[in-house]
Amino acid sequence: MLDRAQKESIVEGLKGDFDKAKAVFLTNIIGISSNDSVEIRKNVREANGKVIIARNTLLTRAGAGTPAEGMLKDLKGPHAVAVAYDDAAAVAKCLKNASKDHEIVEFKAGILDGTELSIADLKQLADLPSRDEMLGTLLATFNAPISALARVLYAVQEQKGSGSTEEATEQVAVEEPKDETNE
Image (cartoon, rainbow, N blue to C red):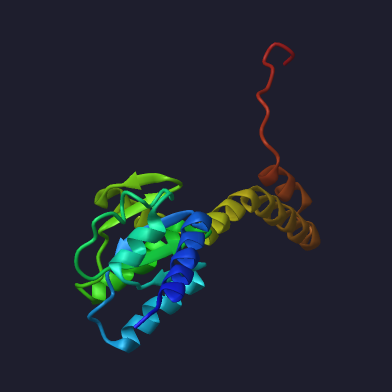
């Protein structure tokens, strides 16, 4: 049994986690095997998040004065809290993937940047690509014109090397409209 000092320490730690968090998700992982629980926690940790399991009274006390206060008020039954420090979509995706394998894991409530989200909003957030995937797509978009130019220049070089300079120039050059008045 925890004494008052230990409970206050836990509450302060949870309050600090809630204050630093970009998003907080209320879910449940109690009732699944320990190996599956460890796997879920590992996936969330890799997404720069944290899964917290504590007594409902401690969660309620820790949520007081934070944006998660309304979500953590009057909790009944088993709960776990997933906290996203950086990429909320990646943590939500971890929980959604876990819910495919385990019926117990489900979104119960969530907060993103101080705004409460509905269950439908949480599912849409989980369907978003992660920050790394979005940055990769953006980088590929930026590199596309450069790659196309490099391919064209390489094709011109190859055709010049084979001796058909006129064909390379005709294929690469953009045809300009001819002025029919001068002819």
